[in-house]
Image 1: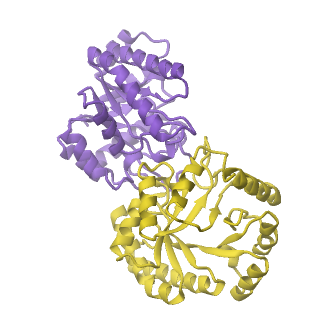
Image 2 (image 1 turned 120 degrees about the vertical axis):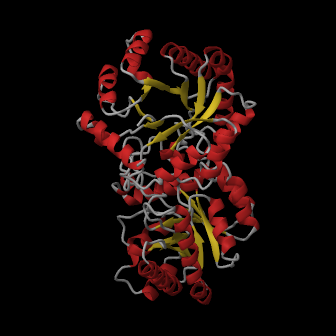
Length: 271
Length: 271
């Protein structure tokens, strides 16, 4: 259980303070904080409260959304990401997860170019703050407006184009990449290049009734979770396994019971 | 307009007879018949009616669904595909489109092996009947239960594994493959190997509210339709451009108006 992390979005109905109370009761050791959860809060206070709860801040979610049709909108995105770096630094979060963005109708190649330029613009601030940036490839069903980076290979290509800075890595989320025939080899490559910065867990349900908010609890779906997790660990990865579940179904129920189920399914997966 | 084909599923509320009357009025030259539309019908009569309507039968949709956990279920799938070959032959349809299938929780590699074996089992009958089989890669969001073949590259790999028989090719549907970074090169490869058997049109809407039945009319979405179509034609492809739109929205409206919009959007796309 020492590697179990939960994202605040997973228990969306809970306030950040409620998460800090509830997570440790269920054996959760790490927390990834979504930026929405930080509204109207003093970040140093959050950092202190998190430490007092015995939770390690694993990452801040999420930066990105770099592509835009105008240069001024792209600059706005960069400015917002610079703010996220400040927030991560204040929270003591070592990592920001990047949902890279896309513009419907703009060529995906152009969007990836703008993503690469956006990350390059952040790099000095990220390095100065000691905050890493993780490119999270998103499932191809999000290629229209959420991310033009849809495979690990593409994430690697952006890291390569940036000159492989240490501060830029990759987040592997099973939901987005489980179908990829190159998954194992690209995970190995992430390990070999020191780019494997984060590992996210959930499951793919059959049927999936909503493109955004019908993810499954581990075991509810068809993903070969243990196998993928073993590939990740096989690279030498010893970081947190982060549970990130967007689910109207689970959000509508009791969140303490949900956390109990998360804890049990995690335990079952790794027993 | 001489290359415009419409799938009967696109105007699902219409009976096959209604399609045969309505399609030509809107300049449609080809028809792809879904097997559901053939229920309780004499196939030779359908063939005659279609010819009388001035419509060319482009393909029969759909065969496939080869993977299963038991050998007897896999044999049932093969038997059903053999029936589809007989149907296609009776209709004068030169092609069957294969939605290859997947079993939730079964390794995708195993499903692809079963798909390859299934197609191999059909090959003698398909060749004897003069009916081609087109592997249609499906979007990765269907990898759980509809198809373990999610990219053109994987379709090529299956063709290669079968020894590249002339009767087995690939159907390119923009909805499934538009996001693929290797799209152009894999279309080129399909042209160079004589495997480009079918080209399907629709669009990807933002937001997409249903995984199955929220496809867009051409122009409603973000896909670079003309560019992809030019890549297809650039290989020397002169076959039909088949409009296949699953849409609760469009199915709920007047189908004659819908056919008019299809005809106009097709015209606009290629003007």
